[in-house]
Amino acid sequence: MATISSFSKLLFVAICLSVHMGLSYGAFSIVGYSPDDLTSTEKLINLFDSWMVEYDKVYKDIDEKIYRFEIFKDNLKYIDETNKKNNTYWLGLTSFTDLTNDEFKEKYVGSIPENWSTTEEPNDKEFIYDDVVNIPASIDWRQKGAVTPVRNQGSCGSCWTFSSVAAVEGINKIVTGQLVSLSEQELLDCERRSYGCRGGFPPYALQYVANSGIHLRQYYPYEGVQRQCRAAQAKGPKVKTDGVGRVQRNNEQALIQRIAIQPVSIVVEAKGRAFQNYRGGIFAGPCGTSIDHAVAAVGYGNGYILIKNSWGTGVTAP
Image 1 (cartoon, rainbow, N blue to C red):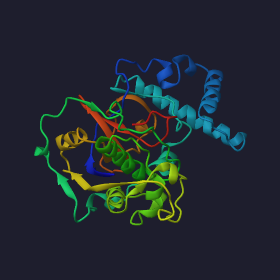
Image 2 (cartoon, rainbow, N blue to C red):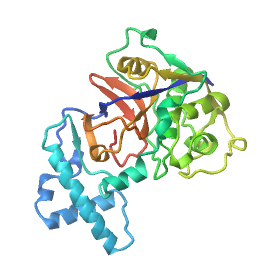
Image 3 (tube, rainbow, N blue to C red):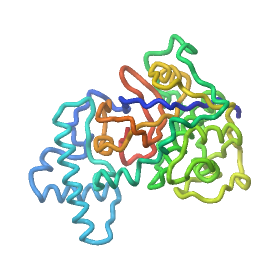
């Protein structure tokens, strides 16, 4: 199956999610708590216990549980204070609410090496602004059947594999009409210029697919740890792309025009506390230029980019 995939080196500041903007953070089913939960220690304990059940949290002993409860309360205070500011987005309880921001950064972001922006293949083709005109006002590739279910990278810094795979899955569906789930684990094991669970380069991952192809996920399932490459032993069909393209740097319109054609692998700064506790709306929180997380842009609309993350379905993450 021959396809064309692309990646972007553009850091896009305003990131959005696919939530109904008419909803208010006051709806506790959206944010995971109600104002009444903040009024007493007993209610906070009950909320914490319910949250533990929902996110399948188990601690080694009572001391750790007490420690995590204190962090949970501190995050909840930050969440509630942020929501009172009437932003275009709202925060809430996520699977990360028992983590300090430093712990969150250590486990889930910081996986794009610093020399990302200088990394490119000699035969990369740059996608230029004028290549496409008359694009639609909005697009959602999920509605067109070109986006597979959200996955969970776990504590492995393999976001670069999920971001790359999502782009390839999308263009493969667009070209062939077949939506198949592809193997992040193959990229983790076999793309040797990246650093496995310590981080990696989406352009290298996409070039691997163009050069060698990539197996279906069912034949090379995700394990969340880097192992020896088993691509030669894996069975089943492979998807191979025609090449890799770059979206012009610092050109928002070029990115949007490329997303109109296919899902795109992009990188963002995700280490902020607001990003950690995000639940919905158009995210316009603090965002710098220190990129540390790869995601897939799978749509856009009026003032936002729609992205697919790899933190599982237990958190509504940007």
